[in-house]
Image (cartoon, rainbow, N blue to C red; front, side):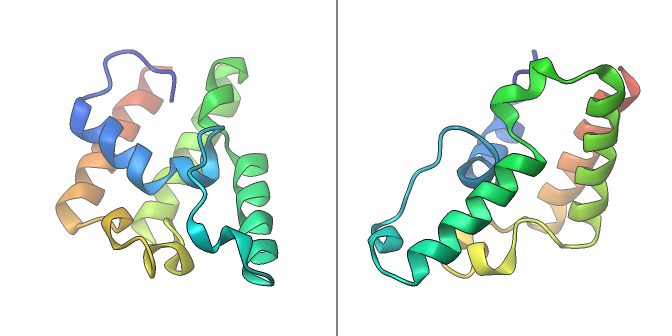
Length: 114
């Protein structure tokens, strides 16, 4: 996310939990070479980047950013992101209750500042 003054702990959690599917910095795992897993994985990554790519954040209008931020808040609150299929293998990507609250608070402040 190309936003100034993102607290380090928030930035780190976003990178661990979101960037593989929502940035141009995907770290492909070893099982990306195994079919049909690779197709499933690539489809999820393609969908994720189409929905939100943090590397393209600066190109979004303020209105679009606010919409994306509202969606992120809702998905964190509902436990929809990160996907269960991702956290099954990447347990470090799971949000604790405290991390989710911290992220929601930061994202709410960011949205309100637009």
